[in-house]
Image (cartoon, rainbow, N blue to C red; front, top):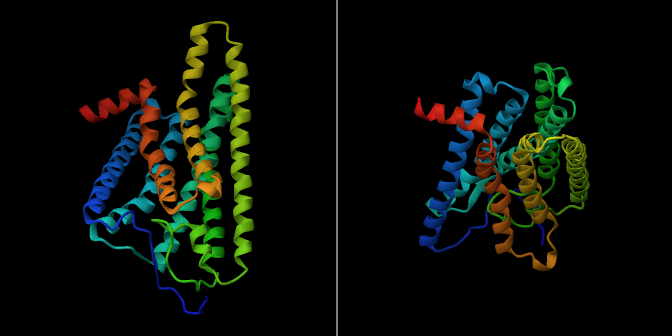
Length: 305
């Protein structure tokens, strides 16, 4: 049943109605958020302050940390406030802003991961041309292109989604504003337009994945041609953090959006959303710092003054 009244706010799905569990969720989310802030903040400060880390790889890592901070800050503070104050509502403008920022950071991050794969390809397969192909201007241009693509995606999706008449209530089956959940409230067949745009974005995401795979095919070929085992290990070890982050991001997103409808349920959707929204931003700094001695030294020096 549709009505033509406009929505001034949306109702978000609560994790639980039990007060004790709400406070438990607040504490859990606060711990994850503080870990993400600390990890990404240390990377940002270390890369900015240590001149030894002023290289293309760490420049892109700095941008990744910024994206992760923005990504987790878009949803988690609101979820913590709702759990702490026993609320479920979000304003229409707040929901639109949340959708815009999520798509901005999400799209930009996958574009940046593709650029970082290219960085590893040039470093290993064309080391003599590294300074030429990845000069400061080229790095700034590629980073700006990643952010710009995310911005264009965000404008396109947000404008299309919130231009639709929404008259099927205001309850969303998710703890944040998610486009598929908002489209369920639409009274118009125009929502098919947004579905087509979403499919186009999915193809672009697959394009990023293909480019990353092609880069690593060339990298593996080059590494296997290195005569010494120590040289092969050293070359490959610089790629492990990026490969791990790519695998983590793509696997969580693919499971969230490609899981069979037969196993879909509100509870499972909540758990999956937590996995791909909260885990990568909190874990990425740990992945990059564990096997990177230069970064560990910079962070240790920063923490000890």
